[in-house]
Length: 236
Image (cartoon, rainbow, N blue to C red; front, side, top):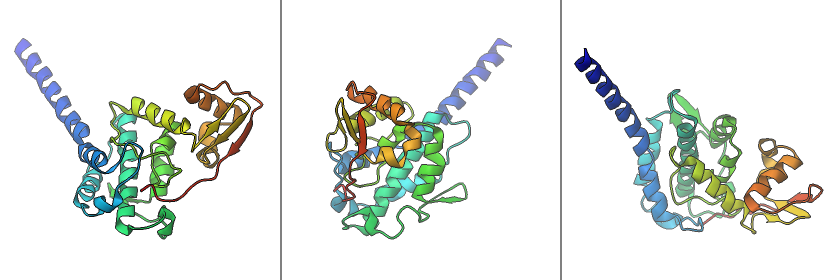
């Protein structure tokens, strides 16, 4: 009986490890490409990346064949869909490069570009119908639209095990970049991200509390809140 129990437990442990392995390795290829073609400041070397398209094509195909399962954790699903959004967006740019802006492409956010589990998705559907519905406002500093005013494309793939740290880092970097947000005690000039996705951050009081957490600025509750122009030029 003891031997049978031990074998059963060992089998379960093996199965658990086997199920975790694909998730652990799912984003390694994307991570390698980001380290090769993205600078520490988030500038993307599309010119050279365009000469080496096989990797990103393989990665997106790999994602399409490994649809998130219901049993996956929120962190696993978020990492999957954030990476998918970013990879598909980069692939879209590579397909049209050289261009001045993603907005030079016809219907970039409303064209079906990603297929998994029998469903076709546009970038808007991935962002609004999947990622935003996970109630995590920090995703707005992780997904990348390839514009200069967009939060930078990180040099590392998002992973479930490091997601909390990665989201904190991305949010801190963006809110403390004075070319994106200008935060003072009496005046708060934020990226239009906070205007476009205002419902994800709450009312003015909640926005200020969110910004205070990452900038460490003691903002006056009566401070003037405004939004900065958005630069859509390509982040190359």
